[in-house]
Amino acid sequence: MIVSSKELQPLVFRFIDTITQGEKKMLGFLLNFFRPKWKHSNPKAREKAIRKLGETGKKNATKILIDALSDSHESVRTAAMESLTQIGSRAIEPLVQSLSSQDPSIRKAAIIALGATDDSRAIKPLLNVLEDDDPSVRKTAVETLGKIGDSQVVDPIINVLADNESYIRKAASDALRILSIKVGDMDNRKLSSSYNRDMKKMLGKLARSGDSRAVVPIGKVLKEGSWTIRPLAAEALGRFNSPQSVELLLIALDDENFETRLFAVKALGNFHDSRTVEPLAKCLEDTEWSVREEAAKTLKQLNDSRAVTSLIVAISDEKCQVRRAAANALVSLHESKNISDEQKAIILQHRDIIIAKHTDAVESKGAKHTDAGGLGVEFPVPEAKTGTVTVKVVAQKPQEAPPNPPDSSSKPPDGSTKPSS
Picture (cartoon, rainbow, N blue to C red):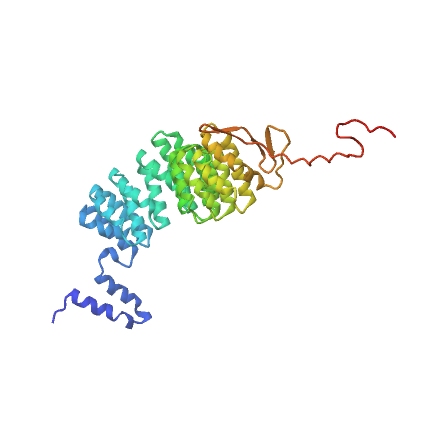
């Protein structure tokens, strides 16, 4: 009976475990008989087979060559790379498909091979890999895009400057340096110099660069960074005069970490953006008193009448620091030209409460301004007009004691002196 190799192969592998240590060499020869040459146990044989596949130039050889890119021997991997380059543009499609492989080593090898083709069609698929779950794959993609990329890859690589892994940030920095020469944008070189192993220091450098393109990577840190880093990202965003910075900081007002919320509130004070008033007013109800205090201080800077109602509520806060900040903001708003006379009158209706909440509040008799020491500012006492009615708000004067009754024994009612007897 003639048994084909296909029928014999399962039988051979079934009895592998029964072969003794001394018969390993025989086993190798036997297995190699059934293996394709590119899976030969000898790396030199595999390399030779891989090179021959490349010489055929056939598209159906691409999958074998891609698998060989993750071979344990460098010589085989190099042969596979060179063979894929020989196949050229016909290898692009299968290589791109390999970027979705479950095996990170295959994805990484496919990236390297796509870079070796130097084909512009490889750029877009490689950009999608910049967010791969595997750090080594992301690093390989950054390095490859730095070599074959053009101006379209600059912004995505800038975003990688905020990667959690220091060595990937370094790869992005190096890629930007290369691209700055290739595309003639020297600002890229400035951003590339922001690299630092310490993420805290790098955020500071990115902020000092003044390049608005740094907003996106910093925003990524604000969203995805650790609780120790997110507050610093919020602080850094406050240095960019960008609408996108405001949007990112407004989102951060709901961060679970109170320090992030605190730094976001502070940063929003750098923007005179009307969108921030109502969210900041809501922060006056934050569970952390330091956030409430900072919100009141920031609302004072914004000087927007929409904050009046929330600030009036805040002057009764349980924390004196919040009460003081809210009172200061109300006094500042009262002096502002941005609010109506009616709103000024509302503030003045709460004047006694504003001052009474501070035990060190004092009042100078007869002064035109009340120096409320707890407020740290002068609170004016003007005439406030509400419609046609003028309300005069004045300091309360202490009541004088009633005069002593006249002494009838000393003076008569008419004031004349009594005649002497």
